[in-house]
Image 1 (cartoon, rainbow, N blue to C red):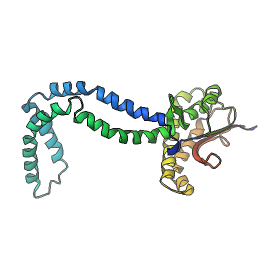
Image 2 (image 1 turned 30 degrees about the vertical axis):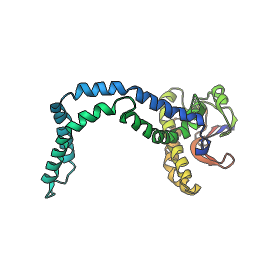
Image 3 (image 1 turned 180 degrees about the vertical axis):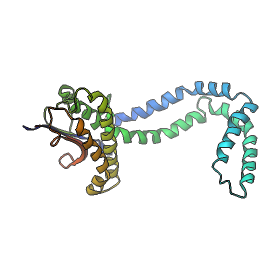
Image 4 (image 1 turned 135 degrees about the vertical axis):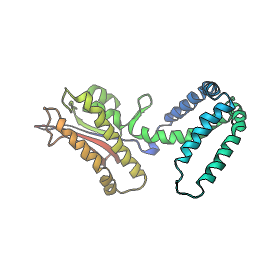
Length: 257
């Protein structure tokens, strides 16, 4: 009968990320700061004396450090002696600075504020492909709805990043769809992420297609588990560029025999 559904589900471009996503970084920072007292309480309980500091921090740290030194180095012993002395000398600083660092507004909270932008930058790389269900959707959750044949839910979250014709059907056999779907979604997510990042880095379309070929090969292997109502030779899931949408997408085609 031919193609009954075709969907292109596009990722955000960096410049399209909604400003509301910044709240994710703010929530992370506030949550982390909220654990300040719990962290210092636990540290004070576990490392409660100079003797414990020496045994649990200094001795363990030195043993681990020593394993990384080439055993054939002539100055190995000198390196370890200097380190052991410096670490032991640091015990007074540790207890003095620990208390001040975990005071409200201290170095602990300042460090979180300084790390927030980097955290947000890293999270954005994920959100570009997944979006956030409370703020704005990207490709991957829509792909899941399409592969499950949930047209009613899918139609509610489509936007200008997507192009859909027809009605999605369940892509995989009913007996295994819940088990296989997480693996399929994972490959889609990783492949789309790589494509978007390569595009941002200025690579050409042909260069990106070569990079993501392994992800598309893996997605093609999943067709061995396709539902009997669909044609495995003419149905597919792939990472591809849509020139009309001008973005990298997860592309799904469902065809019947």
